[in-house]
Amino acid sequence: MIYILTGVAKSGKSLVTKHIIKHQHIPVIQTDHIMMMLHKANPSLGLNIDASDSSVARFLEPYLDALIETMIENKRDYVIEGVHFLTSFSHRLLKRYPKDVKVLYLLYAKMDPIKKAHELLEHAHEMENPWFLSMKGDAYHHLVRYLVDESKRLEQECITLDLPYIEIENIKQQMVEIIQKLFD
Image 1 (spheres, rainbow, N blue to C red):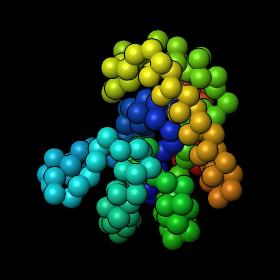
Image 2: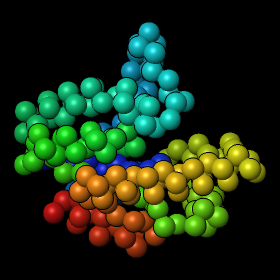
Image 3: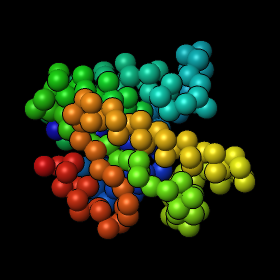
Image 4: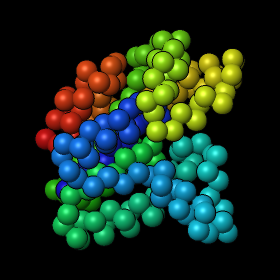
């Protein structure tokens, strides 16, 4: 089974995958690593790693599609984690591989942007890649509002396409629920 854990940036995906590695012993592949591999190995591809997550997702889609097809052929369990799964792509994967792929989106559409901004800063030291720390003042708050708006957009797409998602309020308290929903 290929388990895809995706959703908006800074929703807790990496924290969940650390838990999966420790307790489920399933290999995890991060789409950020695939992105950086392609960017560093072949700059002529023109992959703009600073583009929006959805732009990078469109670029990565054929590579992820081929990777997932190969993983299914090898009949091993894997978790793929990252923001680079457009809902349209996830929908197609579930239609094409209904017995081999599971997808779960992590979102925070109902989160107050000011509260989310404080939460990110409070937990930055626990994060693998707290890239937002380089942003200050209005730029940082604009980013967090954008991420909450992206969560709202993704939530509507998940509802429309009947894709599973969880609204994150407290990632540590919701860990069991997330793991159960992903693996059930």
